[in-house]
Image (cartoon, rainbow, N blue to C red):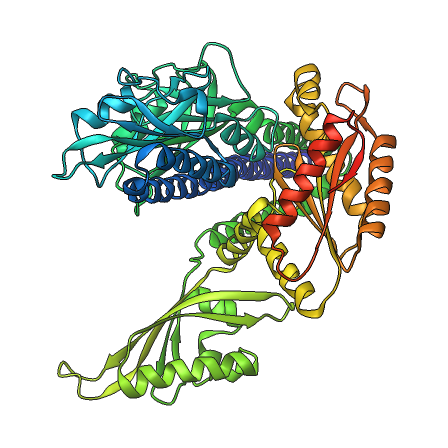
Length: 624
């Protein structure tokens, strides 16, 4: 009996030891998984912030490039702006440019003494701006090939903005003044708010010398702050020399602990004297809040597992085998997860002269879903659809028969039916140093599907108004010209509306710009719901919209305009505060008259009719 008790005691102790061991493994696996999940959460947020910073950077680089082209265009035409008539023509030209380009507030031509010779804002003509830093910086270091980016400053008209300028060279290349553009901060505010996907996010833009230009959402006391301080995110990013990076720590301007993606705006095609820096950040506590919740759930679950295991072992000592099995499964899961981390997302392979695969790395084998033994001797027909095989064979032939290096885009339909895009680089493999005979080829294929999808998305954004989803001004005018040509070719009727929200400034002043954005979005929805699919609707800027109605005469167009006006007047917008808001619109209608009319004429006539509608009491439809 004592021997039996001793044996039983040893068995019980062994079972408890195995239980402790198993629970330690599970706890370790849970902790390890939480550790990895923490890292994955950081990487996900890192990528999302980097993507948003890239989107803003690409938009602002496009804006800078466009503004630069406008400056060069104006500078090239200054020779024709002589005398009073030429000056008036120049002012009209500047107004046309600033009206057509979103994001530009003011455009000036300033002589060597700092006097404004021409401006889209008549009140600035004749002013002396020689004291302005954006004028002085060009005068101090004149360079006709350089685009000058000024630090943020308060304009004559009371706005906080950034100025970009190009030098006007004299007959001998000397400094003869500048052509400058003041960037509209409201455009950038809207752009910065459009990428914010979380309430704790903020986006900022700073000048390359460290002066903070904008922060959205806006905060008091930070505009104009010098953030180029030792140890600040800005200083660390500038000193690193990198174009883009993600940092974590305490923000100098707000004293918050955040994760921040920084990206330098400096288009390679533009010779700029300074750069801008975009920062997109989130509060670290909010970033990892889901992870903490998950960690709490897993910790509670692990605690329940411990309690249940102890109770189960206390009641049924034979459960130690099951617990051992669970521990083994946990260890196997950890091993498989470790192997998954070793995968390389680049496909490398080799083919012989007969187009047969002779080698592939692990990523390629996984792509083809075969082993190394199964791959050898296989050809492209086994892994790709016929249309892709034809393209691959054509590329292989150029490499294997002519010794060309190739780099091309390959599109293929996967087994799941989704289209995948690869960037494939191929180079010949020669049998000897003399390169007298080609043995085969080596290929690297990189999956660029996500990049292509992003490219398509950006192309779509270039055609759409970011707020309402309607056509933007440029795309509307392109569609309008094509539709006008078609109507004139076939002798069809064509009408055009110019529509403006009544008292829109009062809405912004009374309820805030957020409410104004909601009104614009709701109006876009109403127009989509009310008008035909063939009608072309575009946002021309601010609260002004244009609508083109193909195959529609004046009487029918007037009826449509009245119906649209009445529907808008009945539309109720509920603000974030829960307060209902009603608004009205004024509409000007014009109709195509003869085959010699152009789109500008229709727009001008409709705009005049709109002016009549607003001056006669608003919430009206007037016909040109």
